[in-house]
Length: 569
Image: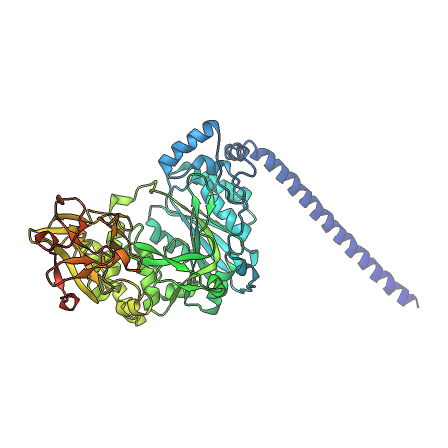
């Protein structure tokens, strides 16, 4: 009995000692926590004396609550308005207005109502990669905030900001400090490049750091909208070879207004034979078409989502491309020709600031767009590269485009399809100016004058002109007579206006004043007006006309290359 009592006392004593030790440890923990709290308060007090903190607080104090709410156009008064106009001329963006607008402004939901009924449950996540060079401080942060606020946390693995060696002081210590103090609870990585690498190589640096399942590239002047990422990730999860592009809405550079084309139509990507990206209007003829991903021949390149593994497997970017330009078409052609597909997703919408000009220079002032596009033409366009080099003949055999061996080996390794396959299966509506046409080349008079676009920019309206025929090839004098009877360049057609003038305007495919017939005597007849194309009385550099058909040298035209089946007797 005594032995049993002794054992119980020993147990109680050990338990008491254990509780005392546990209590002591708990008190030490509380004391440490309290010290940390006091220390953090002291740090906060010290931060108010920090020049960066003072700078941020002063900047934040000028933000006007509610300005630009719901994406409405916003306007400033007084000196701010004057400074904003000056900034717009300098930066192609009203930077003062951007600075006064809340970084977390709320936007209206721009999606079609049918999109709101769809349920997405992706199980994969994304790394958002944003490249910037001397972008406006508030614009970058608004991009970041919009992604954070509109993306569910379980779908957002990280945001990677890549600074392409900016020189703007606000994008150095101040940006670092903002991320550490205002956004410290989010997984945001800031990668700083030691020298300027250009958009293409900077994106590759961001992609190498990324760990998310899907890479989502955004420009640094965007605003994501409600449920923007779910349809992108869901589609990638369905088909990892699908590269997705959201509908890109316009944020006005002058007033930051968020504008859309509604949901009755949207655009997918195309291209011109000069190597530039173009937009193609898509009409939604039924409800399904308003919410279902749509095939897109190309993409603008600034905003897209791609499976991370597929990005590397399909060749990422051409690292020998410099700066910016051409990489979007190169990737578009490569994705389609090498087993992937490119789609525009109507239920994902992102706003993008479109500037009238680039507010910064490019390294060495090289024509990086032309050189990069020459690279892609040689690698991916096969015999159709002839049409690009009509616009850039000096680049066709120019060593400045660099070595293409690696990219050609990539194409062979991936067993990619031909560009002819791409045109026939992906972009069959693309007009080819020297195939399946009645005539093409120069359109001459008997006195060595030729039809000429008078250097009309692409996609602009202007007169169909007359100019002395160039001895050597000139794109401005290259025309086709299509099998639909269109006297056209690539996407612009000759159309009669006011019963006399002939304008180059967008081809509409409905014939009427854009329909022409070539007669055996060289007359080009317009049935809608019952008149003929004429150079009578037209001076060099002026617009041709139509007038009553009477034959003669002023109404006789000759195509350099002619399919005689086009001629009407």
